[in-house]
Each structure stands twice: as C-alpha cells, then as structure tokens.
Image (cartoon, rainbow, N blue to C red; front, side):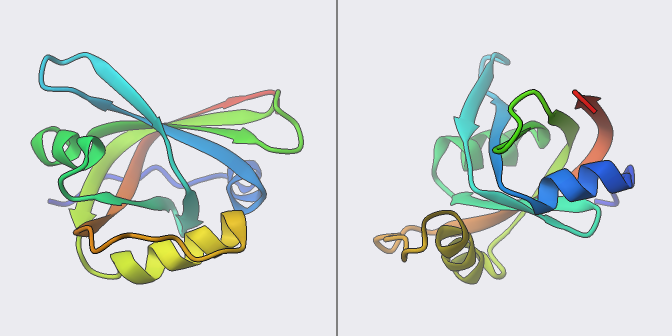
Length: 132
C-alpha cells in the first residue's frame, strides 16, 4: 500500500512534538465510529502509536484502515489538530515503541502481559487545525 501523505506544517509539528492528549477514531464492524485514547508521537510526517493486534483498534484497522486522530495540546486545550488518514499496522518495533511511549507519558514501564502488539502508523491525508 502506498499512501499519499499530507506533510505537516510547522505549527502542527510543534504541537505534535509537545505534551499532547491524543485519541483515535476507527470504524467498527457496523461502520459506526469508535474512539479510544492513545499514547502517540510524531515520526516525520506520520504519527505512530501501539495497540494490541487483537484489541478493538487493531481489529478495526485491519478490516478498514481509515482513521482519525484528534490531538489536543496539554498546555492549551483550545489548540488542537484533527488528522484524517490511513493506518498501516506492523509488528515491527511495537514492543520498543510502547516502552518509549509509556516512559514519555508516565515515566514508568507499561505491562503488556505478553499481548501481541502492533505499531500503527497514520499516513495523514487531511489535517485540520483549531485555535491556531
């Protein structure tokens, strides 16, 4: 799958590189949106997070890769971005990424209890900014 990626502008990069509260919306089997809070970070002009391969988000994205990520600035809740795009799932690097994200968000290890994890990479197709 080759994704067309919309590059992030400098304001979006700055927001994504700061302290953020991200949540994703995926599409359930009936087509209804389902949202979840995640730990995420920018990786170039994509955003990455981790979920369980068999978790709701993992199953939703394996079936339909359309995704929306809402990100709110932790310091200024009126500043936010919505990133709509396509997700690609891979098992590569998921254990390392969840460890890094857990330490970034909580300062602690995150117990995965042996769950099969996947890295989700969001390729943005549309970025909408609020409060900039």
